[in-house]
Length: 333
Image 1: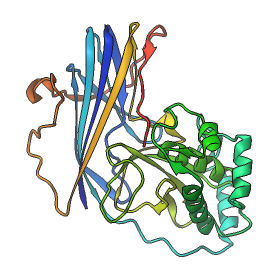
Image 2: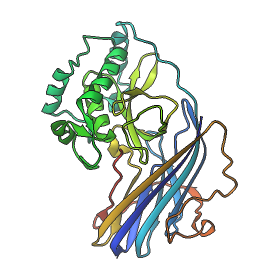
Image 3: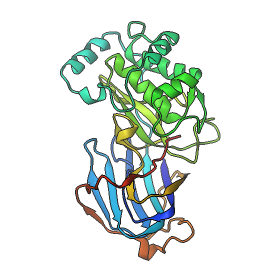
Image 4: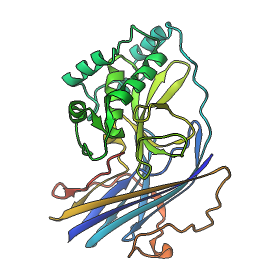
């Protein structure tokens, strides 16, 4: 299956800011069952784009706009080919626990087992584990992970705007509601507690009329991947109670959301900022010819394609001074 993804982020500043420094994780990964066939990123005001790979292998574009501006638009367009991942078995033998423990003891996955910024233990998780009867002694690892995915889906209501992009998991645990970002952080923390490597995946879910997904169709999405012997990284989506299929488009992986925000940056100035995000995913059974200079749907006032295009040059991330204020980030729905 082929997907065209258009992701536009707009920042509005009142009064204008003097400078912006921003990094963007929007380029889909090329690995496993997906290939990014084309990627374009443009900004308004125009900026020269630089690129690097972070420690998790995610592609990061970054730029600096040193001039005074009241608006910042970031638009990306991707063409991605995704095939169905290998079919998972119905269950695994109980002996897989021993193989898993041996891999963990060798230290191969320590960073996906340790507490991270958003995925760390809280007493409220102990009660949730008891409610869901979450215990590694009950089932084999794959069956247990599927049970947890289904249990979180039932126990938590999907409710946009219930939590914030920087909310700790305690907020969602207390309310028993949240968005995909909250679902993923809760599941990651619980899975790591049982010595199963688990990581956060940022990307997109291509919705269709037959699937009845409860996550938002016009936003980025988040799910988890757990590592199991012989199977590798297995994608699971507690928001929708699904295993990852060819409808899941992976952009970035990390320990939690703090490693993979779609946009993150800072600006210089005392101002109030407003964030708007739109995501459109189109599906086709054959490659889409985007042409040599495919046009993106730019918001009003954005420069034309020729003046907005920016060359990509590999360069390490830029440093910034401490007195600048932090940009808003996008919560994953």
